[in-house]
Amino acid sequence: MLENLLFSINAVLPIFLVMIFGLILRRLNIVDSIGAKQMNAVLFNFALPVRLFLDVYRSDFSTLWDTRLILFTVISVVLFFFICWGAGILFMPDRQMKGAFIQGGYRSNYAIIGIPLVTSIMGYTPPAAALVTTFVVPLFNIVSVVILTVYSEEKVGIKEIIKSSAASVAKNPLIIGVLTGILFSLIRIPVPTVFSNTLFHISDLSTPLALIIIGASMNFTKAKERITPTLLACIIKLIAMPVLFLPFAFLFGISNEGIVILFVLYAAPTAISSYVMAYYMGSDEHLAANIIMFTSMMSIFTYTLGVYILRTLGVV
Image 1: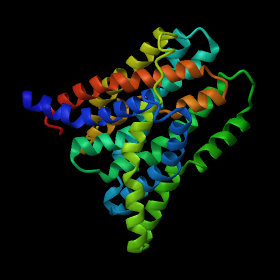
Image 2 (image 1 turned 60 degrees about the vertical axis):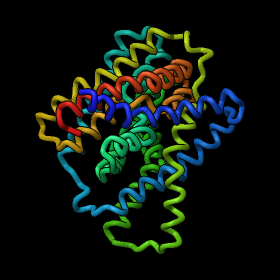
Image 3 (image 1 turned 90 degrees about the vertical axis):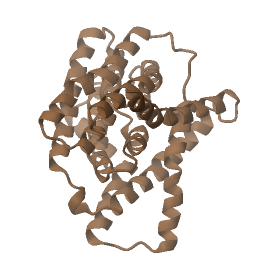
């Protein structure tokens, strides 16, 4: 039992200690809000897409594909979105808060925190971990555009929603990185050593840079505001989703590797981009920021407990 607990702590805690390091840098004024945004641009547009490209490119795509895992992932995310929508209707009286609350409840920070954590738990990066990104990232973007548009102050037609969603997916660097990796893998396009080594160096930036950015972006000054909806969103995001869907994943015959990927996806803190979308689409950006911060902090404990349970069950 103690061995399983130590394994869980060793797998999860280093990820969040780097986040704390980012918070310390912000407190020491070494990194300010502008610097965090600039680093986030580097991460989102270059380091992370290159990481996903390499993860897929180095894999045999014939063994990479897992229909059962992909099907279960997509269905569970869509179902949980509607559960969050229902919770938003029931518990959020304010129209502006509804969109931010619903998005905060289902949208996972999987690409930034999830994949490094899967690697830490498994001891390697499963190719399917990157493949899942191909489906969940555009799904998160599409659903976010839809729900924030529904609860925006301006009345927007279905054509505008579809157009905005399609543009969001087509321009997403993470999707471009994964699809490019699939193309290069299928056609077996060789990458010269000088370029591959360069890409590896850029890729190595992704995990530490992402965690430092999250820590540096935390703002406790408004933490007391909107505390009730924030805590409710945390419970929904970090506990309800894995508790609801992981038992069905076992019954559906998902492999142990897939179970770990799903657990990390379900229990991931809310994506940082949810704040940006809430701000620009007229939703409650303060609630969105609170949910991101609190889910990031609380996931230290929920992830550790979850890994411990999976370790005890022999999944890891």
